[in-house]
Amino acid sequence: MHVAVLEDDSALREDILIPGLREFGFEARGAGSAGALYRLMLECRFDMIVLDLGLPDESGLSVVAHLRTLFNGLGIVVLTGNLRRSDHVRALSGGADAFLRKPADAEILALTLRNLARRLRPDAPDAPDATAAKPGWRLESDGWCLVAPDSRIVVLTTLERSLMRCLDARRGQAVGREALISALDADACDFDLHRLEMLVHRLRRKAARLSAPEEAPFPLLSSRGMGYLFAG
Image (cartoon, rainbow, N blue to C red; front, top):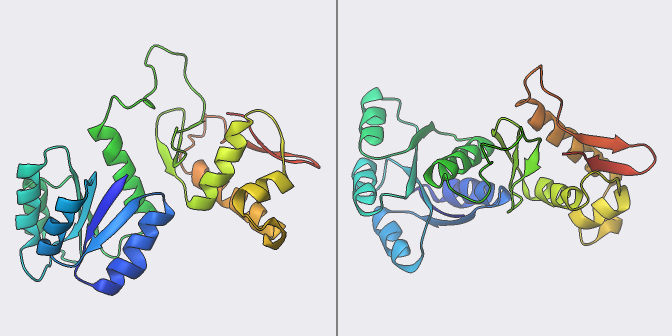
């Protein structure tokens, strides 16, 4: 998914927002002004725009309205440190899809963008069949999201995605730690086994946030003496 980041603070844009989005699987490019964004959009097609309201050459509210007029299917997420309710109302009424306060957490921003993409493209191939039996946990086809039985999602980092793609390819079977480490790092000899254990722990904890008490837990299971398996 291609995302443009319109933010005039170059350090925030290049050191935090863009790397954070890339870690969660987005193809992100940046612009420091409205004019730079418009030029960038002549070169590339974007699915989402993340923008700040305080820009040097044009009001962010004006940019939102302009983009919405030209691109009805474009996702627009506003980031701002401005706490004025009137700006929130004007941005949302002008065509923004979501409004997040700075500093935006990378995972929350990624979740916002992924959920927005699912709403904008409800007929995507990964949409569950309403007539089918209640599904279990599944990995979306591009590997960047885990989908819970109730269709809520967990966005994955690069390492989490590599882990889950390896496990999903052998769903229901135990995968050895060495094979998982090789999938995570080309130089497996330098990958600490404890990093794998911590990665699994963090992923289970992320998934647990979505699990209702009456539901079965996220089925990433330990296989004694072997490694891990994804029961689905």
